[in-house]
Amino acid sequence: MNWFRGEHYALARVVFERALGVVYLIAFLNAANQFRALLGDRGLLPVRLFVRGVSFRQSPSLFFFFPHDRAFAVCAWTGVVLSGIVVAGIADRAGTWAVALTWALLWTLYLSFVNVGQTFYSFGWESILLEAGFYAIFLGGRYTDPPVVVLWLERWLLFRVMFGAGLIKMRGDPCWRDLSCLNYHYETQPMPNPLSWFFHWGPQWTKSGGVLFNHFAELIVPFGYFFPQPAAAAAGLITILFQLAIFVSGNLSWLNFLTMVLAISTLNDAFFETLGLSAAQTQPQPLPYRVMVYVLAAAVAYMSIQPIRNMISPHQIMNTVYNRLHLVGTYGAFGSITRPRYEVIVEGTDEAVLLPSTRWREYEFKGKPGATGRMPPQIAPYHLRLDWLMWFAALSNYSQHPWFVSFLGKLLENDRPVLALLRSNPFPDAPPKFVRAELYEYRFTTPRERAETGQWWKREYAGHYFPPVSLSDARFRGLLHRLESY
Image (cartoon, rainbow, N blue to C red; front, side, top):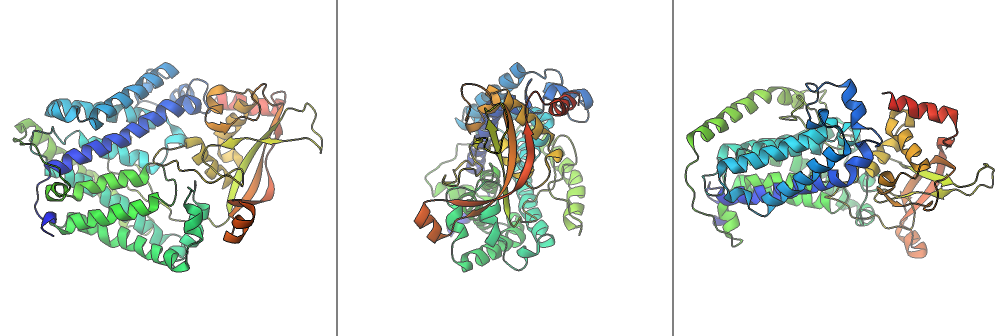
């Protein structure tokens, strides 16, 4: 176990920075590919409307000054280039201040997307990435001593991610206490992947044992992050193993990958040297930089008071942001587990008159369940924001999701950016005359049913979700107009 020992972190810093750069790269590619359709000039929830009703102080973003598609594209692709510079190792060879500038630009650009992203950017992993990226500003270049204090701040973030998730589960759904949550989770999670079906039908001991391992990894292991080596590295490796198990069983955006990246901050140079890596010679950080690091640590300590109060409160709130800079929040996931899985199936028809015999054709999404014979795809660590929101839409009424009404309007127009978010368009030549949405309950087929039919899912009609509408429908046009007037 000698490779565990030692408190040197020059290699850990390099690996951590490159890995965090990969997460940023994924996030900016996501913005480049999806932001225009979701939040652009003619998106489902246009930024130009959002900034009319919210002040810059409430939600700081560069897009208050440039709320247009061209600015979104320039910023997204700039983020891609800067992320690539980090991943390629160019940034950390350029010196401490150049590294700080690179990370500061990445943080500022992504903060700008998140703070105007509304419901499409309202998830915990956005804030986790921003907080981790902000601390990275102070990590320094490859040839300077690694500021161990900053790595400890990353560990503190990791602790809040893991321990907060453990607490919210124990205070939430009873299935976490009776060890039955995984009987439902693999089937009802937002976006299953190719292995979810197999996990769902695995032996019962794997599911009960999985819940026990979850509690161990989230409620006990996190305290080890702050122990001397080798305990800290052991805790970090257990966390990586735990997150890897979640990663292979479902699509949770880059949450699991990012958590594994945070766990790198617990590993020391002796560990990476066993993998054949070697550290460059380093020299002390400039005095002004060291002062900045300790000021940062003091500020984080002060800002941690509210998150700690939230975590120890019996009324803990999951994924809470205390400031619009997304620094030092509280996090958590899956405090409750849905039992039946419902899916909103969107359909259209090119028939001008609706009759009982009208033929409706389904729109297929890239990630969420639709066709029962289609194997759930592997999407993570990439993120399909529209598909993810469709899972939430199925849990409640469409009136709670204004973007959904706008989405149907875009389908009636055959809007190209929005259609690019889908797997297929059943009306490639001309837009449909009517669209509607139906609700179905989905279940994984049993092993016997899949062997006999080749189907991954079976579904049962559960009722109407949104009535048939057309662009000539005055009431529907009124709904769209109210969204534009928001």
